[in-house]
Length: 166
Image (cartoon, rainbow, N blue to C red; front, side):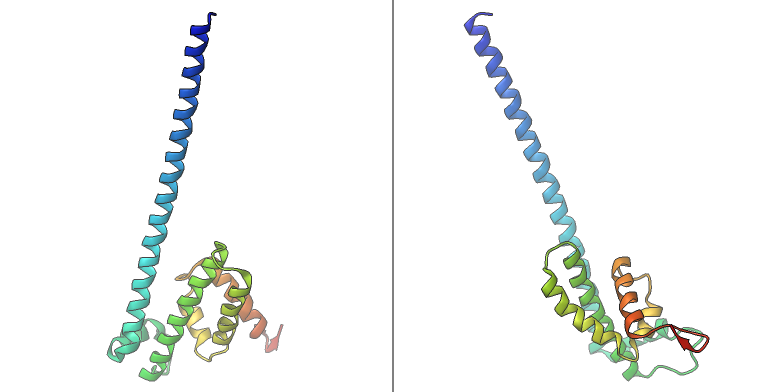
């Protein structure tokens, strides 16, 4: 090969590498942007959910929606508006802590920060209405979060079998 041909081949090779790298950068940027859009959309949804729950807390007449769902056919005692208001507040807190848990799993908050949220969660699990919420709302929260809460409940409220704690 003569020198001119070598320069043309080398130039073509460099152009091919540059174009390939440029395409790879565009692909990674597109994926990052798509992930950011998905995250933003989900956060918007969670914000709307929290707004809805706050509206229920502020307007007790709307609590009937939740009390009907939580009441279930097997409950003998009617839930009071006070009970429902407390449950709405617990659900709001539970949802916020779930968001913190998911941020911890994504490593967006560190372990020390998560532990501060976890203390709040442990306190919530001790509330008399919490176990009822947990049982009736199972499957409506992130599965990993529900499993984490199950472990906390096992530590703080041992399950009873045949009248004995395990």
